[in-house]
Image (cartoon, rainbow, N blue to C red; front, side, top):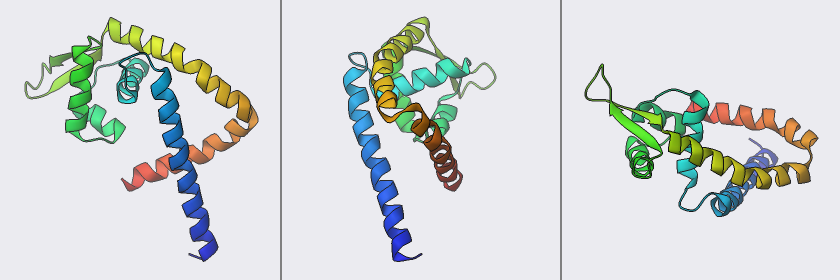
Length: 147
């Protein structure tokens, strides 16, 4: 790689990491009280797939350790946002489903973050956002493949 390519790569990742940190800070401020980004992410995932998942499947989907996912799921269970039951086919495994309270909490979180997200997209312009999405998706897929 040339020095120009190295500088470009460092600048790209620096911008992505900084944007990630700023977005996480803004999301944390607008999410409902007590809800963390990891909680919202799991609730949103379960809502969008509409099916139960094992903790291991969720950990894999979020690229976190099983221990980290277990910690998040325990907090969501304590809040009444998920139901965790034994897997009827394999008693060693558990299955996680979104509860009605979890669906409501997810919907409240969506309502809370939508104005902030719409403001950012509106400021950038839909055209710019649409043009950058394929690049960000390709980057994500590439990073997932190397994981």
